Each structure stands twice: as C-alpha cells, then as structure tokens.
Length: 202
Ligand code: GAR
Image (cartoon, rainbow, N blue to C red; front, top):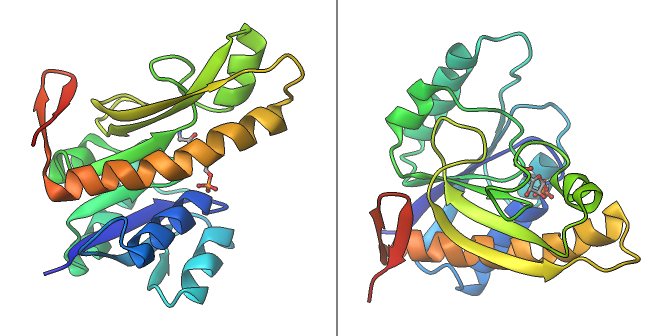
C-alpha cells in the first residue's frame, strides 16, 4: 500500500512541487500526495497541484479560532487517510489539538539553520545578523514555532554580495533537495527519536 502524504501550504508551493517531482521520479518510493490543502484562496500552490491532477482543498482560515480551523483541516486529512503531513510554506502555527492528533507525523521545512532565525523572513534575519553560513532545516513539528526534533539540515555559504533574493534562491534549492530526502527517511521508518535527536537506523 502506498503511503499517503497530505501537503499544507499557504502560497507559492515550490516545496510541494519538489515533493511531487520526487514522488513521480521514485526518490520517495511507494508514496503518493493524496491531498493539498491551502488556508489561503488563490495560493499558486493549489494551481500547481491541480495541474498535476492532485486533489486540492482550500479551507480559508481567516477569522477562525486556531483549533476550530485545525479541526476542519484534520477532518479532511483523516478523510484521505493521510500517513504523513508535510507543511510546505504553511504560514500558520498549529494548535496543540492538531499536533497531538498526529504525533511525529507532521514535518516542516524552514529556511534557516534552526534554532537560529525562526519565524518570518529568516533569510533577511540571517543577512542582517551577518552570519557567514545559512541553510535550511526539516524537522518534526511540535506546538512551538519552528521547533521539534531535526531530521536534516543543509548549509549554504552567505556571500558578500548576497541580497535577500540571491540567498533565498541558494537556500530554496537545498530545501527542495532535503525535504524529499527527509520524507523518504520518515516514510521508510529508518530513524528513531531520542530526546531531541533524530537518529538514522539501518
Ligand atoms: C519556503 O522557503 C519555506 O521554507 C518557508 O516558506 C517558503 C515557502 O515556499 N517556510 C517557512 O518559513 C516556515 N516557517 P514555497 O511555497 O515555494 O514552498
């Protein structure tokens, strides 16, 4: 039986697209993206999913209390019998209800070397701080922002002539690579969690 992935996004959807490419190319074997959910109307990621023939749902979050909203999303994920939830540019903090419902089954990609620069505009934060390396992180999601045990990270240099855009682009390329790799590791169950550490097995 193929493992069923649900993707939550709010915008562009390039990480979704990278995951979809990896599934299609067999880099994430025995899996399918069963549903893509956006909390924002008009998210380009939804169009990208539709053009790949993947099922989509837009569930607007505006004005809804966090848990009320998350219950709606959880119901759709359950309806689709989702094994793994991938946040891909999903710009919402999850409620404790949602996190408890899917323990160790929610992954997030973040454009910094966590725990540095959580939150918004991480690449700009990195440039302003003056770090010489930056990168991205795939981690399990807990109820805190951009926290949870780290599965993979990738490091890129920060160059003297970098702008936010050039650094974004360098990091994004790595995001697309390590997100697929992390999803494969998790779906194959080739890891164990000890405290905050995610250790690879066999
Ligand atoms: C990505 O850079 C992702 O790491 C970031 O949003 C962007 C979404 O791009 N996520 C976060 O900042 C989460 N805290 P995409 O829609 O093209 O995948």
